[in-house]
Image (tube, rainbow over all chains, first blue to last red; front, side, top):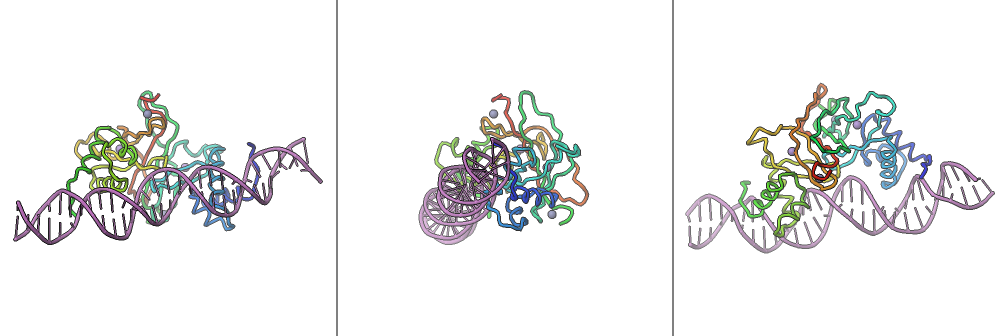
Length: 124
Length: 124
DNA sequence: TTATTAATGCGATTGAGTTGCAATAATGAG
DNA sequence: CTCATTATTGCAACTCAATCGCATTAATAA
Ligand SMILES: [Mn+2]
Ligand SMILES: [Mn+2]
Ligand SMILES: [Zn+2]
Ligand SMILES: [Zn+2]
């Protein structure tokens, strides 16, 4: 299934890029200006994740956030890095802090999801 | 509001203790034998978390898991440790691996939620 | 220009977790 | 032990995030 270019896809990615942070579907829908269906936004986001354009963060508030993968082009971002969720402004940002661990023998790793929560510098 | 001792509370804690792992409400309800209402289990779990008996893990599958806090009595478990979720057997275990990071200036930390996912040693 | 089929909108649905309320029962005072 | 207080429970309804089925629209390439 080859991907097609649509205004919706561009708009979603643009909003996330502009914010410079990880965003939830709700936040994207609010900031995007034009009316885009909720299900469509989720489908766009899921496709971007499949294609390695975005990465998904499962926050401890039970919601999903989506952020640009800079690890692909620039190598500035560690493949596994911490995320910070501010409980005040309800945003998540990718921290430039690598996640270090040594998994016990015979464990197979497929995903890393590390979220630190609290109050960010802007809200402190 | 002083806590009261009930069979339900004991049963829930006992199931988690026996498993030796973190458990979800569903898993607890299945393993507990007697029929206990879903809402009641959640309320018991939430109370245990408030009291520092259990700690809550928000997994990347969107569900909550609950595990015994051994950090309180024994000091063998690091206050912030990694968790491992096996996608095969749908369990979460506390890993004896400390989470190390240095938060940027002016960030206030209230919670740490680090979950590694994959296949555990028993399912590999 | 046209056929193919990916993408979208809408409504319904799932699943986890919470909440209001009435009934039940643990606890402590008398 | 008896009784009053109120924490706990069960049940049903509800919230919220995310997904799904299906008909419609529109991007792409022949
Ligand atoms: Mn990130
Ligand atoms: Mn743990
Ligand atoms: Zn903030
Ligand atoms: Zn396993």
